[in-house]
Image 1 (cartoon, rainbow, N blue to C red):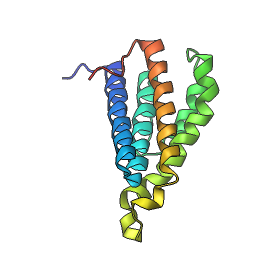
Image 2: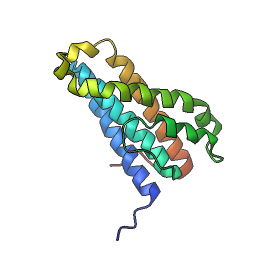
Image 3: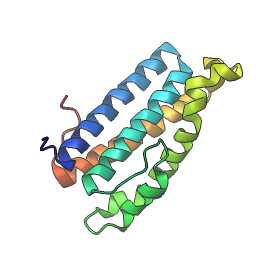
Amino acid sequence: MSSTTNIDLAASAIRRSARWLKSASRAMEDKRWDDVVYSSQMAVGHASKAVLIALGIEYPKGHDVSAVFKQVSRIENVPGWFSSIVPELANNISELAELRGLAGYGYEKGLDADYFKDYAPKAYEMARKHYDACAKFLSELYGLDAKND
């Protein structure tokens, strides 16, 4: 029987988010715009789920956990700086989740990577800020180091 705690799982999730963010960065360098959007969504999804796991909040199995994530701002021990950005973070989750399928399977609709050329830098910046906020939150509350993998 495993003795993995929520904090252990949250640590794994935030480290996975860091790897997805690195993938998004490399995709930016390579001008693989659809991969930037896809990897950015995955980074945001894992970072968000890391926070939810650490707080013991159940979330639906899926990519858009924005509705559940909004609950974070109502939890007592959540720092004010984080509570104040929860609406923005929830919006990031929702926006990127909506585009994830198109980024991953746009070829089915005749789209190529250039379809996301203008949006990709925004997606990456959104993911980077989202990851940074979630990593800072987990570090402050639980001493988690997202860089350790």
